Length: 174
Image 1 (cartoon, rainbow, N blue to C red):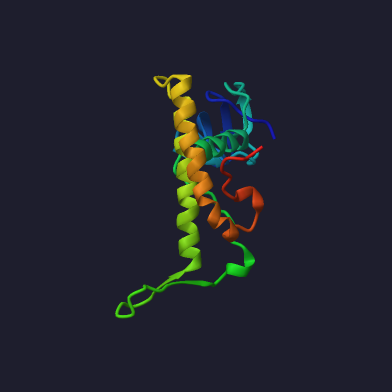
Image 2 (image 1 turned 45 degrees about the vertical axis):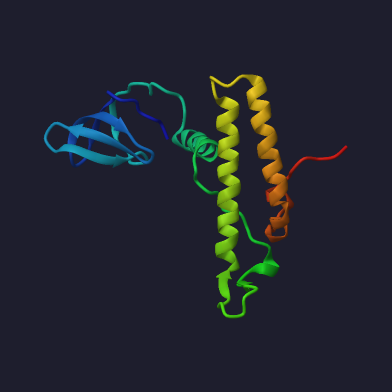
């Protein structure tokens, strides 16, 4: 399938002649002389009157993959991390020391999601510290040590994770 660039002139069997004015992931937006602007699937057999090469030689799937990578690294979007199978549909019961107070029940999936969100936000903070233009390298190292200690404090919750690669890692002793 040939990819047309903006400005390519085409002929459609129903809409007549037109010019490609926008590229989308699956369609071209074509401005037809008599039919106006219409979306045309990229795999539709248009007659090409004059082809203009695309300005960028990057596929939409490559751009989409790059965007997903950027969002994972720099946003607060939480990736899907699997809970250990033995905990699925489990219940966390918080029983107060004072017998006059009621127990609190929390679905383990809810608690686990909050732990994963905390981990992801720590990672974003770590990346922002490392990329900060005004902090000196010494300041970045000092702050990084605090983050590492926070990860170490959270290793208690590693028992909930299905995969070891998703777990918290604190300071390692040599």
